Image (cartoon, rainbow over all chains, first blue to last red; front, side):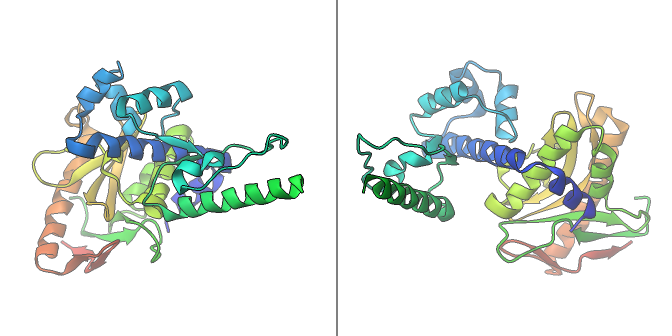
Length: 141
Length: 159
């Protein structure tokens, strides 16, 4: 492995790596939606988003720090989810989410990409769901 | 080309679970690969952009493969696979072989509208055009094989 890239990667703080990974996931997901069902061009997408095409190109190339507002607008354009919060994994997994009224949820939401092809994400959600429900049932009992 | 030859070397050490492979071009006349020279040059002066480019490469290797949307395509004329990875105004030129593999060339800071306007950027693209043609010949002769996530075969070129 290139010593230079190894050095650079080792210096990037882990939160930043996570941030970049989420941003790359979002960019990849937008691109997938653009291609889906005949698809829309970058120009058309830019128009729907009221953005310049160059801005969309920047988003798609990865590394953009998307705001929640932007993500919400993108989801509206495609009428699809871009980001899921793992504690609401019900939709992904088809599992029943139970939240007894007397239980205070003390769980940090984690943003995960919506990627059915990535089984590790599904498994990860599945594990989180069970960790969460297990901890809640312990506290209830 | 100002060298006696070149070699395609691993940029990221290949593992079987990787989604794609990244290689670099190492000219015989140089001590570092073109990509190493690029990252070395901008590591401290364009830290943010270099981190994004490094993170992007790492992501494509370990998670998703070489996604088309991460590359600026058609950087050069006709069908020569030349594209670039960009972050801010940094451009790293490369040859992309679908989602499977990328061969990184060199790159530089782009402060002009088109790469042709910059002597440095133009130099990197022209080098890749020559290299693309040579690799293409070997692919046709089956001396270089693109597998499902790597490039194998005769990767050393003596000119």
